[in-house]
Image (cartoon, rainbow, N blue to C red; front, side, top):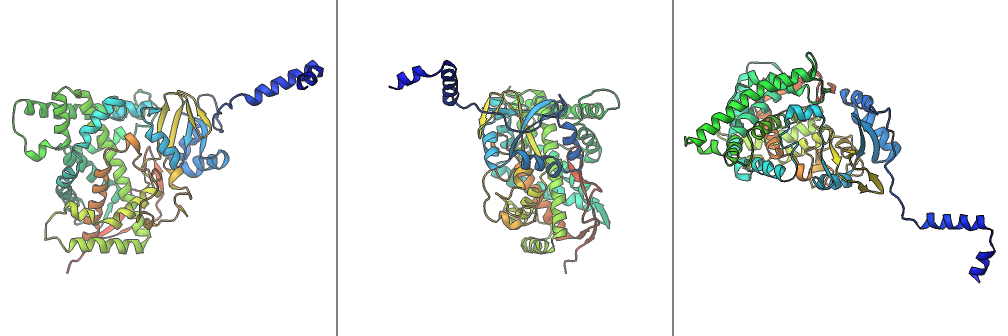
Amino acid sequence: MAAFIFSLLPPFIIIIIIILYKTYNQPKKSKPPSGQMGLPWIGETIGFYRAQRRNQLYNDFFQPRIRKHGKVFKTRLMGSPTVVVNGASANKFFMSNEFKLVISSWPTSSVELMGKNSIMEKQGESHRCLRGIIASTLTPSGLQEMVPRMCDSIQKHLQKNWNHQDEISLHRSTKMVTFTIVLECLFGIRIEPELMFPVFEKVLEGVLAAPVNFPGTKFWRAKKARGEIEKVLVDEVRRKREAMESGREEEEEESRMLLSMLVAALIRGEITEEEAVDNVVLLVFAAHDTTSYAISMTFKMLNNHPNCHFRLMEEHEEIARTKKPGESLSIEDVKKMEYTWQVARETMRLFPPIFGSFRKATTDIEFEGFTIPRGWKVLWTAYGTHYDEEYFPDPMRFDPSRFADPVQAYSFIPFGGGPRLCAGYQLAKLNILVFVHYVVTQYNWSLIYPQEPIVMDPLPFPSKGMPIKISPRSHN
C-alpha cells in the first residue's frame, strides 16, 4: 500500500522527500568553534597585543569572547588560525594529549632565543630524555640538598643588597636572587650575576618580538645578547666536560648538579653540546623570571591583606624559634610552610606568571562537538580557568583558604600540566617559600605603592619595580 501511494506522488515531491531523508540520516558533521577570525593573516593579533601590554588579556580579550562564544572559540593570532580553550576539562584534554594530538608551538622569536634544541621544542623520546635528566636533580633527596644552598644564596643576597638600605626594588631584587639560585644551586655554575643578569634581560625583551633580525630591532638586540650568553655557557660546558673526561674528581654535591648531569649525558652520547647549552638558557629564563614575579605579587597580597600577613608571620616565627643562630632551614622546615604555600598559590591563581601556552594540532581534533583542523593552533589560558566561578567562587577575591584542600585537577595551572608540566615546579616552590621566610623574619617591610599597576613586556611585572620600605626586625 505504501509503495502504491508513493508511486502516485508527483516526481518533484519524491525528489524532495529523498533529499530530506538523506540529509536527516547522514551522520552529523562537526563544526569549528564560533568566533571572529579578523583581518587576513593579522586576525585579532593587534587587539591581543594591546590587551597583553596593559596586562588586561582576560578583561579585554578573553572574557568578552568567552561571554559571546563560550569557553571554546576561534580567532586568528600571529598569522595562525587559533582555537582558544578554557576550563579544567579542556586543560586536561589538551595537556594530557601532548605528543598525541598536539605539540608545543612557540613563536619563532621565542624558539630562536630560547634554543631550537631546548626541551621547549623537543618532542617524544628526545623530550623524555631531557626531562629525565632535569628531573634527576629535583628528586626528594636532590631538593633536600638544595635547601641549604638556597638559604646561603638568599642570605648573602639580603646581606649585600638589603642591609643598610631603607628602600629597595623588590621585583629587581627577587629577579637577581632567583637568577643566582638557578645558576648556582641548580646548575652549579659560578658566574657573576651582576655581569650576566643584564645580558639575560636583553634576551628576554625579544622573546615575543617580531623575528626581524635587523640592526636596532628588539629581536636583533636579543639575538646579539643571546650570542654573548652562548659563548660563556659553551666554555662552561667544555670546561666541565674536560674535567670529567680527564678524571678530575668533582665534589660529590657538585656531581649531582644539573650541569654535571647534562655533561655526563653529553659524554655518553645521549645529547649534543647544543642541547646542553640551549637547556641551560631555557631553564634560567623559565625559572628566574616567572618565580620572581610570583614572589613579588605574594608580597603585594600580604601587604594588602594584613590578616593573611599576620597568620603567615606566625607560621614563620614558629619555624625560626626552632633554629640556632646561622642555622639553615631544612626540607622539613619548608614542609611546615603550609599556609605560606596557600598564599603563594592563591597569588599565582590571581596573577599567573604566564597567561597560557600555544599548541599545534597534528591531526583533526574532535572536542566538545567542535572540530579543530589539523595545523591550527590551540591556546590554553590560565585566566580562563583561574577566574571561572565553576572552580573558584567569587574568583576575584583573594582567599588562600581555597587551597587548604586539594582543588579540582587542571583547574590551577600556573605551571602547566601533563607531559609538559614545568620541570622546575619544585625548585620554584622552594625558592618562593625560603625567600619569604628570610624576608618576613628579618625585616619590617611595606609597599610604597600598594596599588601599583602590572604591565607586560613580554611577561608581567610591576610597572614601578615594586619599591618597598625596609628596616631590620628586632629580635629581643
